[in-house]
Length: 212
Image 1: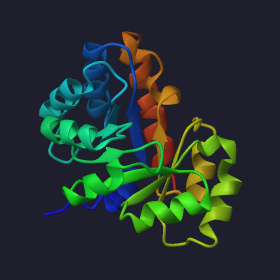
Image 2: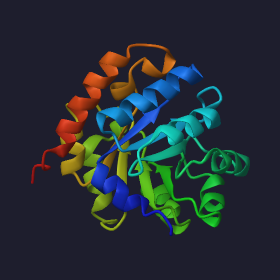
Image 3: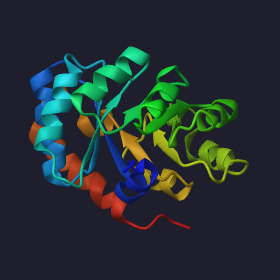
Image 4: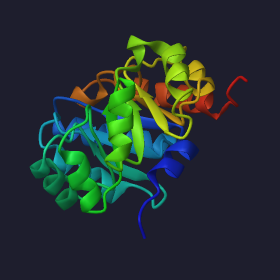
């Protein structure tokens, strides 16, 4: 049965992005996020030994959680993350990994900024479009993109803080991707208690109905 990534993201509303400098800290970060109730977690391949981190977090994850790989750029990257047990992939751009992941049955949230990139990503059968960096245009830009593309499921990623989260959801994002504003320095050996506190705050904000 193929994972419906769009449905899962829309239900979770939060995609946690783990990008750090220490493998063990990245694993601890992922486990802490899952323990606090985050249900969709991505480990960026720029993290040292990211496949091991994905495998370790996946082994500790509850059945309803999803663990994926981010910054997946190449055909080789797709093979590596499949071997590690990644359940989905995320890209920063429209790249060769998208059709390869789709071919191998792995859903993709494809990075795009412009209308052409967003449309191209969907034509390549990406499950969702990661609007990145979302902060460049803000919620108003997302709303403008959705006018000609109402059926594209957008995930706003890049510079989305706690204060901005409601506006992106109100503008039509099915979810928001949270890296530094949520994870902080935890994935590089920093404060896990602070991470847990931020996770609870973000989950509470995402649970509120978007303003009409």
